[in-house]
Image 1 (tube, rainbow, N blue to C red):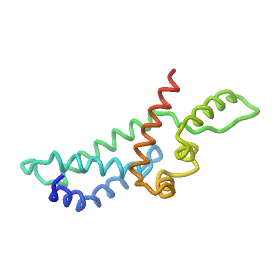
Image 2: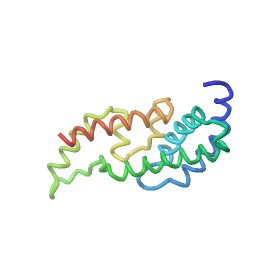
Image 3: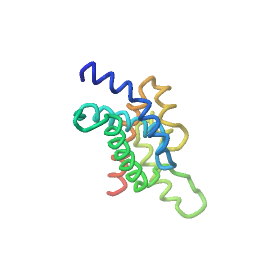
Length: 149
């Protein structure tokens, strides 16, 4: 990216934050939305042509569409965490989920168990939250494939 494009991204990060706050809901965390929005902002900067009108209008439409898609996708995916139920129904299912979670990257297990957020894990590991977000997305795909076997 050029210096001008980098400047456009930096100047519009507040736009991403504003839209992410608006779309925040129980299905997807704010940090995840912000990461998705930043990536989409970069795509908007790369594909923007001045004859399309105001950049913020163009970027807002792209970011909102990406958020809607992400939220829709998250609503469809089952929650991966588990609650061990040692005396009632679902005990074997709990063991299967526990076995699946044991296959997840050890650093990401607290996220899938609902013990930590992506931001907390990123701070502990000293990496960007977007890196953790990408790893979580990859782990979700792997788990989804494991569940559908």
